[in-house]
Amino acid sequence: MYFKYYVTVLLMVIPEVIHSAYAWGFFAHESINHLAVYTLDPELFGFYKKHTEYIVRSSVNPDKRRYLVDSEGARHYIDVDQYEKELPLDTIRWGYDSLCNRFGIEHVQEHGIAPWNILWMQWRLTEAFRNRDVHSVLKLSAEIGHYISDLHVPLHTTSNYNGQKTGQEGIHALWESRLPELFFSNYWLFSGTAVYLPNIKNVVYDILEESHRLSQIVLWCDKQVRESIPSHKYYTIELRKGKSIKTYSLAYRKEYHRLLGEMVENRMRDSIHIVGSIWKTCWIDAGQPDMKVDVAFPEFDTIQITASDSLKVEQKSGRKAKSRIDAH
Ligand SMILES: [Zn+2]
Image (cartoon, rainbow, N blue to C red):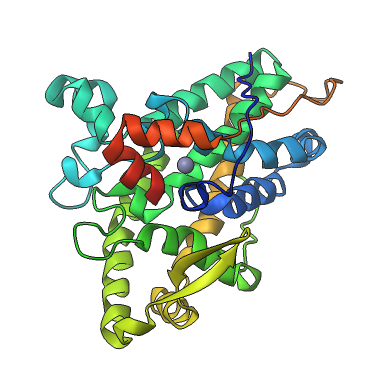
């Protein structure tokens, strides 16, 4: 069954909450899922191409769901620094069950379950292919694309996810939303053909390890910008969706992007390739079922957010709503 939430978006009331809430930004998530379709071989390309609109539009549902389902948030991140003093990863590679035994399930849930959620979804997607359950294949494909993309975002792998521990608050949305919005048209995102991944678990842990390594650079580059630009030039006021919001100045964004080099572009391109490759791998593991099934176009899983839903979240879990959810 699909979740359906028939509610109204009231952007005028809480624009900043909605505005800053989405990892990679809606635009980036949609673009990654869209471009992943074009990595596929002909046997699978026809199926995904036919349903591109669904795959693209549903890519953002996991972020919308975070406002409504308490357990959803932990699927989008993991605080690697809670388990590892330094890289490479070792403790995290023990896996979810071992970490729960060692640290307790509450600790593990609180600090995020992003890698294991992808592995669980991979299993579900493979089963959906095996059953030729087109609706489930599409829904799980769209959503696993979201979670894989989130894992490529360095600040989804640290407890200092918004620079709040180092006086760099706001860096989360800057890296994953403001920069892609500004520079996307210059990115080269052709990622080649999707490949079969014989060991998805290792791939997932390797992505996580690289993201966490990059998180130090993400924070360091921001510090350099703060030292090179006078503080009164950090921010500007922009009009977004009819509201004035405070955001990083163009000079700040350009300098930060220059210092990061091709990091944002590379993480997007890698996301695209892995999303396509995981779709392909699940399909192959399911025995390469013929997906030329003639089904009606599925209804969109409409998850919308009301002002009252968001305010409810804020009131219910103050810290979470004001920090983690807003930051992502
Ligand atoms: Zn997310």
